[in-house]
Image (cartoon, rainbow, N blue to C red; front, side, top):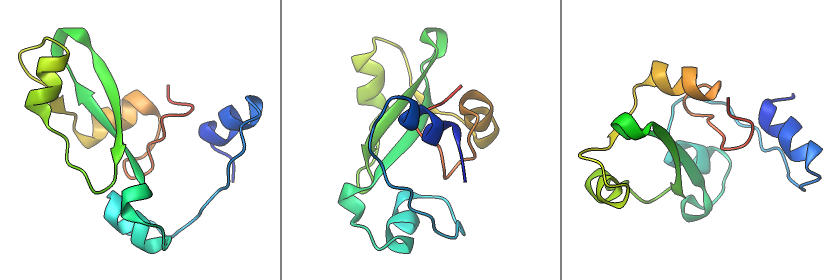
Length: 105
């Protein structure tokens, strides 16, 4: 298997291990359980719309929830919103449930 993330990390000489699991549902909890890996050590990548300021990736521990009001305040925008599935996939080039901060479009 080769993804843009794998290519990116390899080109940078960054050590990593590929962990594969059967993707039956999206979410950090499912992924951590499927890989027998602690949820608090699982990092999820979220795509957020900041309106006129554009889109950002938010990386956070799998057991945490995003506070969109606090995020909007931090970026001095009226509102921050999670993007829908099709937008997340179009922006990143990854399928939801497998979005990586490495090698995104």
